[in-house]
Image (cartoon, rainbow, N blue to C red; front, side, top):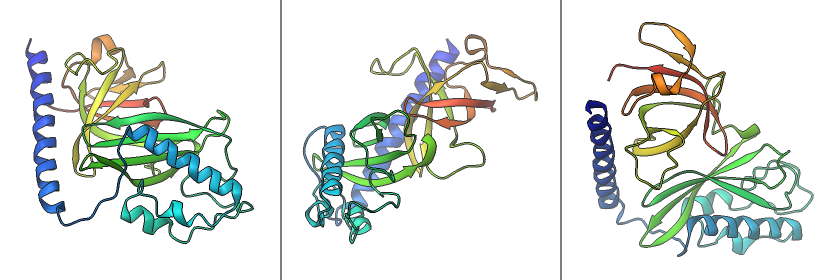
Length: 251
């Protein structure tokens, strides 16, 4: 019962944290002009990606696309001057590929009321490179605010030997029904923004380190519990974090 209550408390803290952050963000953000498109953020991102691929295949100047309302002002500035010539072999800053893909597939990394992050990758499963696409909602319009390229399925820049390295709390049963309860989730803060969640993919090589220094293969039913304070290290994939190590911290 205490664990369940602790889990509810953590969820409440996360919700309050998001509310406070959003209130402060909007209060300081009123003077910034935003772009954006109405609709589903996944569809908006994929439509932009398909248009970008078409421009690359055509070898056109892509000027209209660089100034697309799907992009934030910062992203428009970042992509300004990009050479759409079809013979370019450098890493494409949007597709995150050196060879143009035939099509795309996408996976949700996290989502909340006004922010979403996706992995967009080639429909060819043998091509490992991925794009991490961040979108934000302003005045009911979604805009792409950041695109980061990920070599070999990693998330962001290398952090030691791990592409995912974060501290947070474990939640499962106390999460809303929209979550797949087959998985444990890490609720964590990223870039000062609380409330991010990511599913944890555990396997026979996932190691758990106790506060007593003992390290052994994780046994989820015995070692994982609601609101447990943990440090997770692993590799980010399109389905979640493939866990290498869970370190249990003092609550």
